[in-house]
Image (cartoon, rainbow, N blue to C red):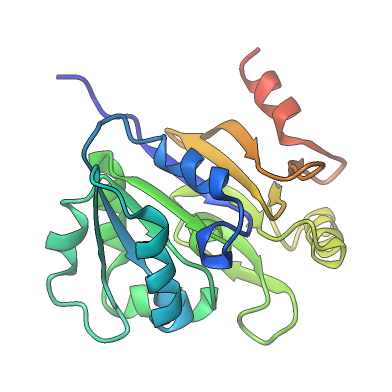
Length: 231
């Protein structure tokens, strides 16, 4: 039996919930290697915003796609059965802290880990992308940018929206001062594919937008870091 590769797609910002970057959504979808695909959408970070859910259905309407969503803010009964039948889970943006706290309160983190180990692709934008890391630079706790614990499916730290210079500068400072471990800064309009926990591909739908690897001493394009990892 061939083991499924474990995939996570982290989107820095944009995509269908922002009515932009259509090819970015396609990049996420193309990670599923089958024709009839079941996609589940979680708008938890936006308090189950119906507008974002409607945008999900509008964007992915297709005879080859089976779409559904789950409003976790209303209740969690049946969530494990729902998620484990999917090929791809896409998590929308919003308040990272509130979303992770809800997951912890109802012991959903273990369900996400089970889905990941099973080979279900986990994707998401902003809060829905950064949540998988050990640590996140987030403004969801007290409106100022500060470190926030993630759920540790991916090692290191992450900040989405790195095309915001203030956010990128704070991320670099926090890593330099050891308030955050080294990690990735991802611009809006950019997705990073992780395979078995390793960054494997950077896709950008916007000119001059990129993802960056940041450590205590330097910041450079993640594409360079991937080349180094691959020898």
